[in-house]
Image 1 (cartoon, rainbow, N blue to C red):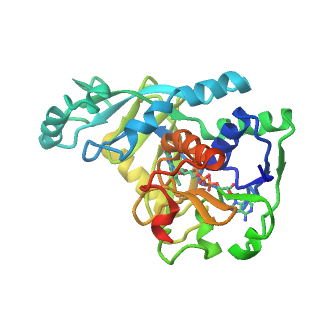
Image 2 (image 1 turned 90 degrees about the horizontal axis):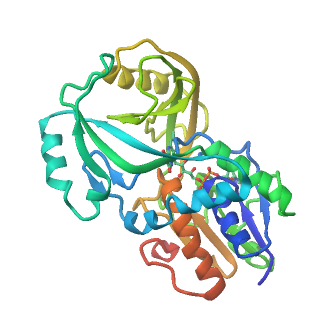
Image 3 (image 1 turned 90 degrees about the vertical axis):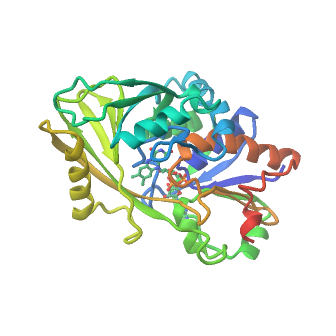
Length: 337
Ligand SMILES: Cc1cc2nc3c(=O)[nH]c(=O)nc-3n(C[C@H](O)[C@H](O)[C@H](O)COP(=O)(O)OP(=O)(O)OC[C@H]3O[C@@H](n4cnc5c(N)ncnc54)[C@H](O)[C@@H]3O)c2cc1C
C-alpha cells in the first residue's frame, strides 16, 4: 500500500490511526492542534438513543457493536483510562414524555437501554415528572483518549507532525502519490473540495462546574446533560449555534448553559471552565467517508456523535481501503459528489 497520511488528529483521525495500527499499517499524522478542535471540547457521550424523541440514532445498532470493546481494548493497549460505562437519568419534561417512554421501552433495540422509571430523591433537582433510567451507555474522556493515542504513537514510531497541512486542490493532492485521509473536522469546509452547503458546522459550548448537590453516580439529561467527572466536577452542555464558527466561548453561550442548568438544578455551583468547539455536521446529518479523488480520502462529518460512530466507521473505512469492499451508501461521500 502507498504511504498513508492522516490529516487531523481529533476523534476521527486518532480512532482511524488506532485501527491502522491494529492491522500493522504504518502511517504519518499531520495535525495542528491549535487550528480548531471539536474533540477536545466534546462531552464524549456515547448514547444510541435520541432522548428528545426516543428515536434510535440511525445506524446505532451497528455502531454499538463496537462499543465498549473498541475503547476498552485501547485502554488495555495504552494503559490509559478514558471510557466510562454509565447510566443516564433523563428528567421528564411532562407526562407526554413518560407516555412516549412507555410506548418505546419494549422495542427490540430500545429495550436494551430504556429501563425503569425512577423517583427523584435529590432535593436540589427540579424533576416533578420523575426520571427515566437509560443503561448500557457511556462517555469518553476525549482529552485522555487523545493523550493515550499520542503516547501510543510515540512508543510505536508513528510520526505525528504538529504543523498545518497545506490546503490544496484535489488534483495537486492526488498527484502526491500518497494516500491522504482528511480527518480535519469542520475545517474541511474551507478546502472547497465539496459542493457548497454539504458541510453545516455548528458551534457548541460546554462548561465545567463544581458542586456538592448533584449525584456523581449517573449522567443527568434534560435540555442539557451533566456528566460527572469526579471530584464533584460536572461537564454541562451543550449549546448549538450556527454563527461564529470558531473555538471562542461566548457570553451568550455561558448564559444559555446557566439558564438551562438552573431549570433543573437549584443547588449552588461554581463555573470552573468554559469551552467552545465546532461540530463537523453535514447537511443530512450523516458522516462522510470515502474517496474524494484517486488517493485523496475523507473520514469526517461525525457531527455530534463521533465517540459513538468513529469506532465502527473506521473499521468499515479501513476494510474499504485495504480490500476495496464498498462503503455503505448512507455514509459514502459519493452521495454529495
Ligand atoms: C460542545 C460540544 C459537545 C460535544 N459533545 C459530544 C458528545 O457528547 N459526544 C460525541 O460523540 N461528540 C460530541 N461532540 C462532537 C465531537 O466533538 C465531534 O464529532 C468530533 O470531535 C469530531 O472529530 P474530528 O476528528 O472529525 O474533528 P476535530 O476534533 O475538530 O479534529 C480535527 C483536527 O484536525 C486539525 N486540523 C484541521 N485542519 C488541519 C490542517 N490543515 N492541518 C493540520 N491539522 C488540521 C485540527 O486542528 C484538529 O486537531 C461535541 C462537540 C461540541 C462542540
